[in-house]
Amino acid sequence: MILVSTGAMAQSKKEIREGERMARYITAVQALKTKKFGLASETFSVKPYGNPYTTDNVTKSFIGFEGDFLVMKGILFTPSGSKHRFVVSNYEVKVDKKGNVRAEFDYKGLNNSGTVTIYMKAGNNYADVNIRRNVNSVHYNRSLSLMGDILPAETFNFEEDTEIHKL
Image (tube, rainbow, N blue to C red):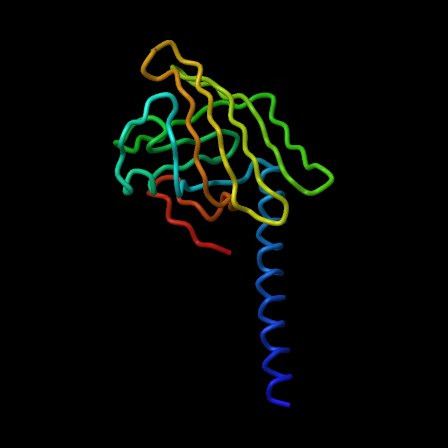
């Protein structure tokens, strides 16, 4: 009898974890659709130039929406962690039959513009973000990739670092 209840308990924990994961996915899809999301970078890559940055700069890097503006901070532009706001156009979110999500939009600021594409697999709020910048400098004309959890914008403090309170 103890083995049966232990097995049932383990199954219950697995179901609970799966339910929590699915809840984060559903929340992330809704946040993407309403432009009310943020993503703190867990990892990044820069192409074609591989500039070395410290882990501290990576964890202070994020992309998200603050009101109607796209906000990017940290490794995306300067290691000093300056926050940059951009106007967004052509915002589109598509969910395929399997539940995979693709969000794509253009952004434009004073000295920088480009396209952001976000990929998120079905049933998970972990996403890959590709940022293709269209700027006039050879040094900055590059593609950036970030990876991390898509979370509702209200879980971010856009003025400070990227303290995130996970669901």
